[in-house]
Length: 326
Image 1 (cartoon, one colour):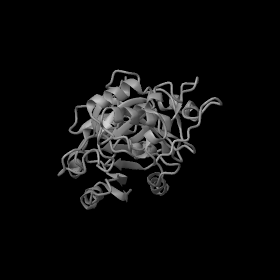
Image 2 (tube, rainbow, N blue to C red; image 1 turned 30 degrees about the vertical axis):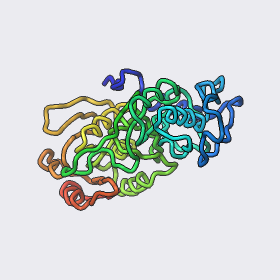
Image 3 (cartoon, rainbow, N blue to C red; image 1 turned 45 degrees about the vertical axis):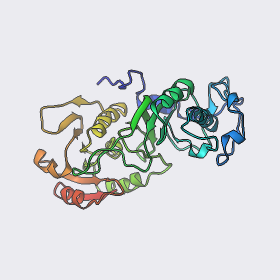
């Protein structure tokens, strides 16, 4: 299946291509410059804003320290009247690097490696940021505390607003079965920050160890992380399902880039795509039993923190022998 980002650029690559370069993305070269900005003090008390442009803090290798990039963003926000002159780096925006993985030091950012989230920015300011700050590929408007997606069948969906650029991001998730790459249109998919060890993956590993090549239903799959981990672990079959269509669209992309070729399907109710050892559905978990008569060894239930999982667990118990609440 040919995959292309909705922005028209080549944002989406096979996971193996990115993993080969993973150690180099944010590592400074010997000539990269350290910075000493105080994150909780007004930027204007530390530097003349006129000195900050794309050359400020830059290196021949093409990277800049994250704090320099945020300072450049804050300068534009101050000039556009979004922030005042007492604003600090800490309250500028939420920086979301891409590809994202745990780092042991502040990253030095290359071109198009950052999507930012702000609840205050407007479209004019966002367009300036994408145009003038080379490291920023996209600007989203929203609050990190708000859940992106749809909580359950009774809820209305919520998304961040993409004001400028592209919000396609890539997370690298380490699992005992190998690294997994997860793409997300971040305005439509909830934000998760990759960890050295994921508690969700650890719970999943314990459940998988109880079976020999189990069949698995990932009934609230999001962009597909846990179900793809099951495929990597040797599951006999995995069925991915989510009521939020943007999530299953990302699941399809993530299956493909992680080495599981996808066929787009449309002949069966709710079925979006399929392939060797997997199917992808977009349906309410409570209706899934009426769509498929399959029974599973394991059902994974991974709901948003503020959602009561009782109805999900009840529906899952009718579909699987073992239910795991992640």
